[in-house]
Length: 428
Image 1: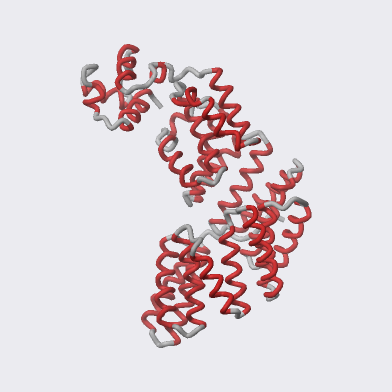
Image 2: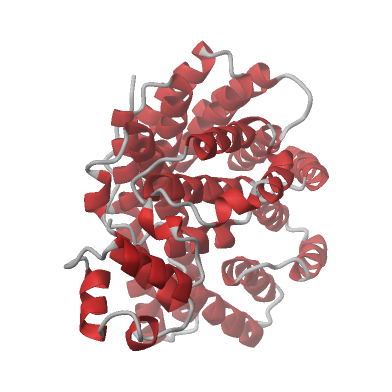
């Protein structure tokens, strides 16, 4: 990374053309060579450009000089991320002048990586993704070849998180694996193993996901980190459920509860969710309903981001119980809390099935077709498989074979996407 890149980004943020930025200082062609890195500007030129772009001269002239005081502040920032995230806004406000124009490219990148982490931790995922895209993604890979180990470790791990939320799970894994090779700290190693397992879960490679989840579990148990150990037990249970092994899943859920103790946490909520799923698969619908209600109450109390998933599970249980009145009431109640297109599509699926059960077939077809379009756009292959199959069977029953065939093709596509990454096997 060179000074020209920083100058170009500042010019663009100010809405200036190269001619406007260079006028009265140097020729436009000379300026263009500076931005592209083909020419190293003099201190005098950098001073004039800094004045034109309204930034401190040091922001252009000391790009390779780390500031010891700023390094102390960055260390404090990172410590607050781990220990007291609520104190960060006041900390940033107190030192905002130091963080406004960080001369050292190395330290500026570290600041933006920490800022991304902060946004993720407080649940502002869209803001975090936008911050990474604008402040980190433009950095050429060649820069990190000579970066410090600490910066490279932070960059590879943060990039893994970024690509995970971008749903590019293969890129996410690549960065996490690089970070795993760099780290010598067991807490970060355990976190990376857990995150790789999550990425593999999203890729439907359940066998390999087991390996990393169990590795993370052993690390967290060794550190006596019972909360994160519970997360690992829950993830392993979810993997067994995905492999249609409810008995094994129940065993890990029980272990998860045993290591967590009290007070109640978000991990308890996730364990209750998976326990209700086990009970549903065992056809104990009444107990499954009682457990999912307990789960929903806890998640509401804790304001968990996974609340909607458990509310969908309740709809599935109510459908299995045949309680269509309660199903309709819950669907109506959920409509007001929909936050995105995928949530709406999943809710539409259950509403369509309700219409089908009530014999309102026109409404059923309309709702299910709309649901299928959005599930396909959002690549929710599990839900798409079930929805396409349900509508295909409906068309076949009504002798609409051409429509049924198209839906079967879509169903096959979903099956293919679900199985193309599946390798099977697991750590013994």
